[in-house]
Image: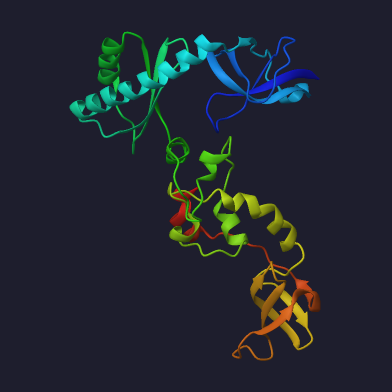
Length: 287
């Protein structure tokens, strides 16, 4: 076991573990820490606690000190510089006629580096741009290409539910989401129905998946062969939430499906929910 504190560098960013060096810190405290890219100012997201060594990447970086007024003033000054740097970089991108979209600019706490985050459809040769930016700002320049999910997280906005993006509100890290989740939840596989504003699968599919995994164990899947009070048949529709299934009876295949509660039928041979190749090919860009 090792004592750690968790620190965030962005409002809803990933939490990183640090060695508190015998300091007792509270959630919300601003601290100066040593990171792989230099000295940074972050916010304590997890107060002192002990965690398993298996959950830690050793050696842990250390807390240098609590942030003072001068440190916080520098953070605010850096924010002002970032706005100016954004305008300069946007102008340079236009001058170089590069097919890229600048999303965010970030100064490191000690001003030793400026990071420019951008999106683009493919690889971009930005070497000339980096040289020009370095000559303007007289410091190290790093351009990072990010994905559309990261762009949504940085910029924020409202989702189809009318609430702020989950990734921008409280999700520290993205969770893997798959087409199979949408199919298991009985959702339409139309890209408009299952994708978020970023154009990728909605993160909220992940929230409900555990509940659906449990419910799907208690109900026959579509394609299953079941025995009912009216005879054997094939399940053509299943609603895990209500526990209601629709069955096409073998003795009357042309008739409308009959409705039963899943608890009132006996499963002879269950089926599996699969995403076929055509569906996967059509929707793979959403994952």
